[in-house]
Image (cartoon, rainbow, N blue to C red; front, side):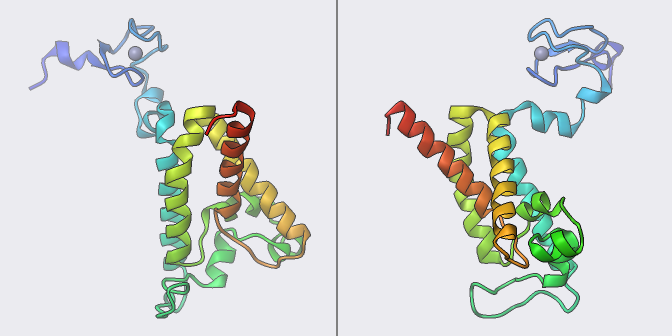
Length: 196
Ligand SMILES: [Zn+2]
């Protein structure tokens, strides 16, 4: 049973301490209107903690991979070649935002430069990329912060695909360019700081 007292309080969505639902500010961390509906949803909770950003990117990649398999008309490839196992069809990848000269110059889909970062061509492809991201992402967050990591990741991916499109690649996908940008950021940090 909820007493009126507990119904009128909640955990601050930022610092997770008990605050009044109608407080104008959280008395502990200063967050404005901690009881507001805008701040009490899973999306806010996910983005409030920058250390969760890597997990969010990985989840989006997995969801997009599942969609790309589901949209493959004759079912995904079950080839015994590990590099082809669970490979979504090209048509499905094109619909979901594969990039390259065909989507960009023929279909004018500039947004695919962003979307293609979240698509993968097989189980191995997504597995290798996500393991790399899982290891490198937290290092970049530690040195640059979560939002900068997100910007480096996104810009790195978009620029990487822009270059491969201008180089004439017809259809391309994957998080590799974005992950390489993170590796570059870590190397740059290491070099400029002179650490290990
Ligand atoms: Zn708070």
